[in-house]
Amino acid sequence: MMKRLHIPILTAVALVVSLIESMIPLPIVMPGAKLGLSNIVILTCLIVFGFRDSLVIGILKSFLLMLITGAVISFFYSLAGAVSSLVVMYLVNKYLRKYFSLIGVSLFGAFIHNLSQVLVCAVMLNNLRILVYLPILVFLSIFTGVFVGLTSNYLTNALSKQKNYLFNNRR
Image 1: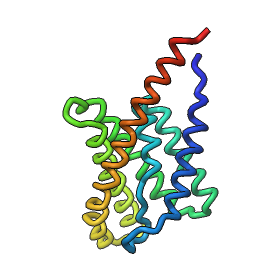
Image 2: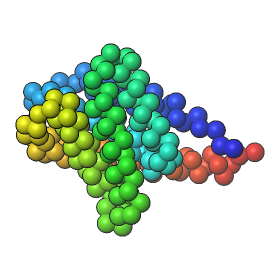
Image 3: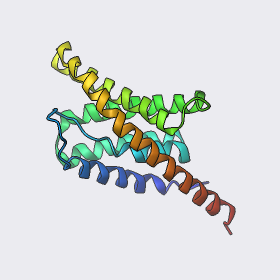
Image 4: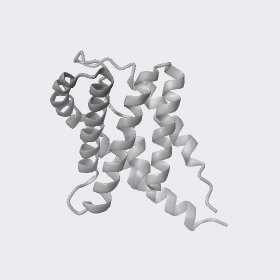
């Protein structure tokens, strides 16, 4: 039975990256806008370790972030974005892999992440006018989505080699 020691480690990495990115000032003033750099961990984990482990890490990161920051309302945005984007990235990677690289997978995830968060906000505020933010968020997420995809591609290649080495050289 394989031990899943990577789950707490990757959860901690995603949490730290998320905390650090919340301190980075953005050039635009938009409530709740973040770079989404912790998605590097989620996407990389999806490719190297699979959907289930990525889902656990995404949920744990959202929950722990709520406990650390005390932002209970943000938990719902974070959880909706994490779960919906992970499901879409999984499906795109599984069924459309020959058409999209990890950059494309990441872009799909970024779009759905933003869409789900704006929809959760619209429901919580009972106001559909919040959807006016969506085109701006989607445009900005193109840049971070490409960065997340490129970085995940690099990390995926490195971790896959390491994973193969570890499993093929066990005693």
